[in-house]
Length: 373
Image (cartoon, rainbow, N blue to C red; front, side):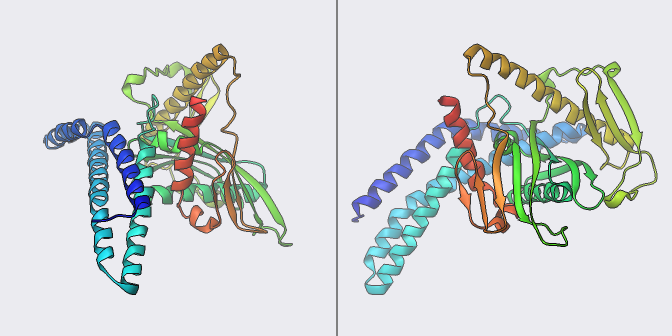
């Protein structure tokens, strides 16, 4: 079989990249871990502790998915030379079409291998955790509140496309439209490492649907991403340091969504951090969810303090990359642009419908390069 030198060199490059991914993932260890998790999952007593059971089944599903993906990539890479061999055996227009199909599969395979390579870069202390996402409307009035709701939908759609679980803890609706703030968890391994590059200020430029003169409006919303706290984190919260307020949950326009005081607001007195949760059915469930978010915020505060100390020691004054990070322009032209990586997309509708992968992957690569600089 004769393969064009450029194609052969590209296949060799793909093989080298995939081999590195396989080594980093440690496939033998991954298979051993899957066997161990399958044994735990088959234990009839597993669901006596629902939180532990959900963690085991989630980790098992993620490990099986990772092994399946990398195995499929290896099989596709091994099949590619056969595609070219079969194409070479054709003649005329059939040969041209078959070669084009093989080239298309090679390009698709490269994109998929590079996406898997990005996942191997998630090696931070908390990167393997699930994520808690907070979205807050900023400057821009009712447009900003609407923009916060659009961002929440974008991330939930992204998670749903991937098959990741989402648990909404709190949605604080604005008076006219949209959200003042929202808090939700994305419940899959490595979500903190993946979504942490989305943290920062997101800017929207569009013709305001709330302006009767159809003027252009710029609005802002802030995205905060936190790692879910685990028992090993030693984030102890003294009950005496917490002020607990209960109130009635409300929906859009201030309407009551239930008739009991089940919503919970926790105020951590030493830090002034305030957390609310109103989406569970009972006060007890809302308090438990709010406590998880409070612990995540305290963990992030601790992590930032430690990072600030290291930055002070290094003398670099810290990094402010997480502030202005992406612009979404719907008028006078159509474009989404990441201000850190330079990645652009001319289809904002698709991006706002959850097609975020290229921005997230570029953000992870950018973060790694910045850390090495």
